[in-house]
Image 1: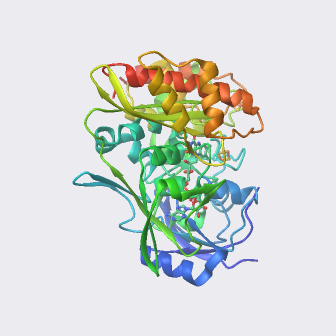
Image 2: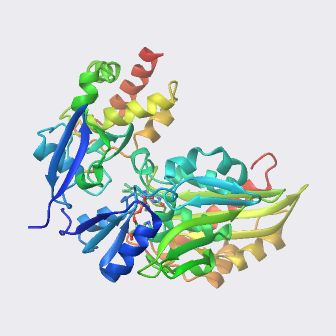
Length: 157
Length: 288
Ligand SMILES: Cc1cc2nc3c(=O)[nH]c(=O)nc-3n(C[C@H](O)[C@H](O)[C@H](O)COP(=O)(O)OP(=O)(O)OC[C@H]3O[C@@H](n4cnc5c(N)ncnc54)[C@H](O)[C@@H]3O)c2cc1C
Ligand code: FES
Ligand code: FES
């Protein structure tokens, strides 16, 4: 085994201090060590977006950083974002528009859409598609997802 | 899809990074945004024994202007470059290229220095750095040196950076008055690497274009200047050159390499079309 590194961070508002292996990804750490299994791992090389999480207020890939790098950082997962209520409009729209089937991609898409809408409160459809281009969904064919983000934008404005 | 075990060294200054690199030599790699290195480690294409994490370094980020020189620190995130008004005003080519670079989550993390140091032949920023004649500032315990972009890219994922060296910043001359730019690429999906692309610049006086230059990317083992294409385009003005002539000029400038999807002939055709788009954009009034 490799040497463990002690790291302190805030996860969903809670202070967390753990010894981790340097090679453990942040996404694996959240799932395996903290039991936050809403963060999914699809490709583990940055292309599918299922592992999207929020660090210091900005989305990033949970599979492309290491837990050991998170010293002093603030991490928010789909569990934390849901509990805070900040995704409620998007989540309602996703339910109403059937914008998920298996739900594997959904946490990543919700967090991505939330950051996009915060910067672009009145997006055109094409801009929504571009913003979600880094999130793969194998079930829905995307139309319903774009619909849901558009109607959440309307509901929020 | 997990990386090999490695030792993580977290440094908070460029000097600290240089010391770690000097100590661990070829075993060590710099970890910046991790958006290229970590995928390679997960695939085990790369297996460094030591990672030197520079994300907490102060003084390595930020976009600043001193007189006519714009400096982008190595740790400048793509998102900052994409949204910077300084970049939009003084380096419009970069502003045009940024929307093609990666997705939102990638851009929040990926860095300017990392993109240049990684030297993916299909990446946008190395092509821009070459066309804009950027000066790459590199440091180590041995001191600081500058390498012109034309000498910096040495081949596939290969640059002038030595194992003990750190990319500190890239400096560009602010746009000259009347300078116009164009940037076009073909990608299968927004945010993906280009199948092929073109960056172009010229000086426009009234209806006339002078000093035309092109860089092609995604076509060889590094971004390449296309002087024969530029001569052909200048000679044809105010009309556009013929596609067949463009392909001949292109062949004189570069031996186009295939990738896993396209033959050299297909790439040559794509590039020729992109060059026509770029020329159209350069000639149009009211464009940047
Ligand atoms: C899904 C996906 C899509 C992408 N699409 C695009 C795209 O369309 N266009 C594009 O250009 N890029 C794209 N990228 C790559 C992205 O832009 C990377 O962020 C960038 O290429 C590398 O920057 P980084 O900071 O992440 O570097 P890292 O991954 O941390 O490092 C890359 C390499 O550079 C070295 N390095 C980094 N910084 C320094 C430094 N300061 N000094 C010395 N060496 C250094 C590292 O040791 C490593 O070898 C994509 C990535 C992903 C995952
Ligand atoms: S698992 Fe991270 S992007 Fe696919
Ligand atoms: S709902 Fe199944 S992958 Fe998107």
